Image 1: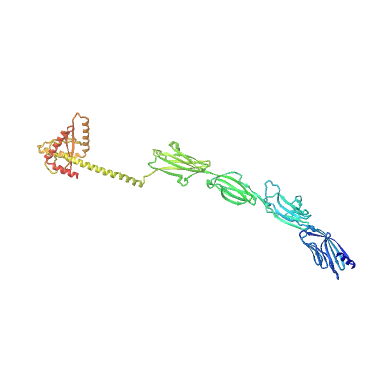
Image 2: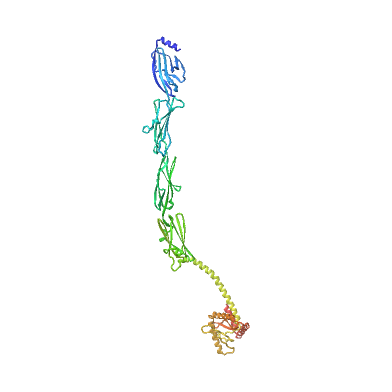
Length: 599
């Protein structure tokens, strides 16, 4: 068919035109269009056209019939070639042959298919090293690219920051005709490089430039660079001190202060705290901790709070003096003195400015962590003597100073409530005792009255007030008073003057008898004792028998004598006395008097 067309063209005397080679660059994977650069003149018709690659037909058309050898190929209205999805194999010389009714045209094209590499740039996370050596902080990769092409690193000002010698190239694994390139950015970094921008720039074989931006990711372990140099700080009570903790790190670390494990302050990057030694409990371990996602750095110090002694409760006392009350039943007095300080105080006791050892004082000390309690015991006799202890002093001291407390003594007064209790107790005891004593004396009186009645049956009494005449038999009366004692005997038939004289003597004896009763009883007892001691010598005992009478309101005592060693003698005396009482006619009077006395 082609030969026939050529023959036809020859017969028609058509001139053939050949156009020189034209270079065309095609990008791998994209469509390739090669223009025919052909236009039809007047009264001209295309008889046929066909495209070849390196002599191999791709597509042809004869009049209206189209023959496609490569399915990717197609022709436009002006006979230009369109080739989809070109590959590296599509590189080479392309020729176009067009035959018309008037002429024949041949055109040649050189096509080069190039691959634009895939391109990526990434920041490499970096932890800042302490040895300050360069570290790879970013990487730029170009894969499967056609030569020649290049890549490079630039800072934010467009200045190259990577050496060309660091560029690494290698053949692509899938297509050895392509090249892979890798360029890393390495430098010594610090915390200020974190987040800094860098650019990776690629120039490919197609003449295009690509650019990727990256932000560096720099991390750094926290590091405390400013801290109190001393590991131990001593503060006096009431003193203040600022503690500074400054740290670096990427990202910026959080700074936390703790005391004995309890958080007391927090900041970012740095944190300054103020410690005031307002009390001894402010002492302890203070730790600063700087933390971020990469780790933690810590530093610590110990704070010691010291101060002069302070005696508990002394400030609230007048003149720092406490009054100690001594009760009557106290055998000793105990004085207590508690002092708080760091270092712990030494306590010294004095009594009236003398050492307590001189008054046998006993001191007991009970130390604690920050305090000491001292007890002083002194027996009460030292406060009751002629020159008693009047003041006790407690002095607490350490290297920072001293404090003291005074004690004075007072004797406890019996309170009204105690008086009421004591009176109640006394009354509760005295009332039963008094009742018993009264009952005892009443019974005793009754017994004595009964004895007097028995003893006075045979006696006679003169009733001087009534003027009655009394007969009396031998009466013996003893007077132990200041005027002496005498006994007078009168016979029944005595004269009237003798009887009158007897009556007067009896009245006088009755007046002196009451105060002499106890003395006379004592004489009786002594007489009885003498009788027991001297049994060989019989002795008469005087019996005193008081008989209440109505003789001028006086009490009269009739005394009879008998031998105590001779029972019969005493019985005869009693009998005789009884008979005499009857004879005198006063028996009835005696009975009445005894009844009245009993009442």
